[in-house]
Amino acid sequence: MTGSDTLFQPGKNCWRVEDAGRFAMIVDGADYFVAVREAMTRAQHSIYLIGWDFDARIKLGSETAEGPETLGDFILWLANRTPSLEIRLLRWDTGAFKAVFRGNTLVKILQWKWHKRITLQLDSAHPFAGSHHQKIVVIDDRMAFCGGIDMTIGRLDSRAHKDDDPIRTAPNGTIMKPWHDATSAFDGPAARAMGDLARERWAAATGETLPPVEATGSCWPDGLEPELNDIRIAIARTWPETAEHEPVHEIESMYIDLINSAKDIIYAESQYFASRRVAQAIACRLVEEDGPEIVIINPVSAEGWLEPIAMDSARARLMEALERVDRHDRLRLYHPVTAKGEEIYVHAKVMVVDDSYIRVGSSNFNNRSLRFDTECDVVLSKDATSGEDVAERIALRRNDLIAEHLDTTPEAVAEELSQRGSLIAAIDALRARSEGRTLIDFKMPELSTIEAVIADNEILDPVEPDAIFEPLENRGLFKGWSDRLRGHMRRIAGRGREGRPSESR
Image 1 (tube, rainbow, N blue to C red):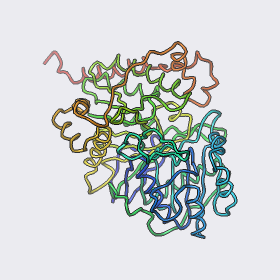
Image 2 (image 1 turned 135 degrees about the horizontal axis):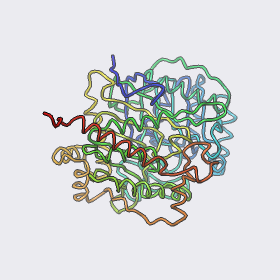
Image 3 (image 1 turned 90 degrees about the vertical axis):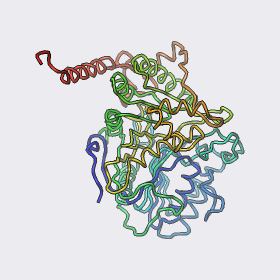
Image 4 (image 1 turned 180 degrees about the vertical axis):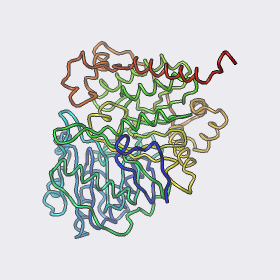
C-alpha cells in the first residue's frame, strides 16, 4: 500500500498519480540504451516509441547483446522475431525532413514502412513553429521510460564523460561532444498510464484510436537495479492549445509548486534557463530571509545556430535580474566540463527539491517547454510511499548527480554538505580539490543590442502559441516580474508582523 502527497493535484499540476512497482532513474545514454534495448527484447505485444527524433543508424546498447547492433535493424529484427508484436514510432514531423538524408536512413525507413507490424508516423499536431518533444517508450503497457534521452545521434556517452572517448563515435566516424542526460524507468499501473498517454498522442497525430494492451509478464531488464519499490508517481504534461485540444500547463504548475515547496535546497539540471515564470518563482524565494539555496546546472551554450541567440541571451538577462535580488547569495549557475576543460553538454531535465521530490522528464526551463511544445515529466515524492526511506534515496540521487560533475563520490558530496550546511559551499569546496571533471561558474556575457531585443521580447521562445504572432509591445521577458515580486515581499512582511509580539505586551 503506498502513501500520498498533498502537493500532487491531478488536473492542476499533474495528469494522473499512479502506483509503480519499481522505479529507477537512469543517468546518461550508455546505461539507458542498454536498459531500453533489453526491455524491448521482452516485448510480446506492443512497443510505443514516442520521441522528438529517432536515428536508425545509432548503436543501441552493447555489441554482445541479442540481435542487431543498430536501431534500424534492431526494430526490424524484433518485429520479425515476435509475430505478435506491433511496433509504433511517432516522431516530430519538422525535424524528420532533414533526417531522411542521413546515410542509409531513407532505406531503413522504407523497410520499416513496408513491414506490416511496424508503423512510423510523423507528429504534426502542434502549433506553427512548435514541436513534439516528449521522449517516451512504453512496452506492453508493463514498463515505461520517460525522460530527456532521444534515440538519436550524439546521445551516447558514459558517466565518466572522458575526453575523446570512442564510445561517442558517430556513424560517420567523428567523435561527438560529451553529453549528460537522464531518464526514468518504471513499471506497474504507472507504466499502463504512460501507455494511455502514448495512445492519446498517437490519436492526436494520426486520428487512429488504439486499444490498451493486455499483457502479462515482466519487461524489466535484469541489469537495471530499482532504486525504489511500491511508490506513487505523478505524471505531468505540457500540451499547447490547438483547434482540437485544450491547453495543458501541468508541468508549469508543477515547477512553480516544487519551487514554492522548497525549504533548503533546489537542485536542477536543464538544457536552458529562459523561462520567465520559473525565474519569477525563483526570485520570490531569493528575497526571503530563510529561503532555499538554488543550484542550476546548464551547458555553457545552447546547441545549434539559432538556440544560442534565443536561449543564451534570455539566460543572461534573467540571471542579471536574479543576481540583483539575490541579496543573501543563495543562487548559483554552473557548467560541467571534462578533465581537459571541454564543455559537457547538459541535456538532462532534472529537479531535486530538498530530500522530498525528484522530477525527471522532457521539459526544460524555457517558455516553449511550459506552454508551446508537447512535454511529459514524472515526479515522485518521499511521502508517496510506505516502508522505504525515500528521502534518503532522493538525497543520494542528488548527491550522485553532483558527484558525476565533480569527479567524486556521492558520499564525499554528502560529507561536505553535512559539514558546511550549504550545498553551494560544498560544491565550491569539492571544485577546489577536483583534478578531473568539474563545474565552472556562469559568466555574464555582454549582449549585443539585437540579442537583448530578441531575449527581452521572447521572439524565439514564445510564452504561448499565439504569442508568436503578437506585436512586440505585448511581449516581455520581465512582464509581470515587478508586480509579482512586490506582492511576494508584501506577503513576507505581513507574515513577519503577524509573528511579532504586540507593543502592548
